[in-house]
Image (cartoon, rainbow, N blue to C red; front, side):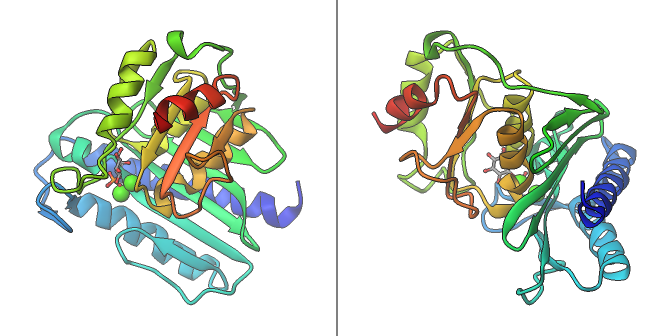
Length: 262
Ligand code: IPD
Ligand code: CA
Ligand code: CA
């Protein structure tokens, strides 16, 4: 691994663990929760504390890099070789309710190419990481997507955007078809972890509409490096925007797309 990639990977791992420690420490304590775009779109003081810690550290240690961070702590100019795409706390609704499913997600692009992905689940102490061309790991051990080839036996996962109460583009038709065609569908509330669970074979596939760059920047690389496939719903390359993401072990990908399209 080239030295610059190794340095970025090491810093991403450190930041994810440090932000995860903040999440663990403050989990199930009295924290301030407020709403963003809609009443159900939450942000907590822990989201902001995690983001501030990571952004301040990056500005100090890598002042020449771009940063895109969800809570607006950093949306820097663009045009730099390295760009950090950060979800400081993925699974905020879970966190605010004390439901134990959330993580830190850090994806790093080099010249626009997904190069490093790190996702840390602080309650399970599980660190998922991938470097382009180097495979995917969970707590240092190689992981691979599942071998389930039939969608009828597959365990799927999905999620719903915060405009689900007032948008017709709500993923419910796809959800119903998936429930009727698969071995089960979960909705756990952390897209970054959903992608990691595809990467390590716990889920056979995951899809979602209207995600954002920070939800998928690390997870797409993890699934690809674990031998899986990630596309948009038409089977094209996965949009960095997260607008629509279909991910799977590869074996059932075409069947997944068929079910989702209806
Ligand atoms: C959300 C989670 C959730 C997904 C939403 C995302 P947040 O991110 O990943 O699983 O269904 O679409 O916005 O707000 O917890 O960072
Ligand atoms: Ca998120
Ligand atoms: Ca978030």
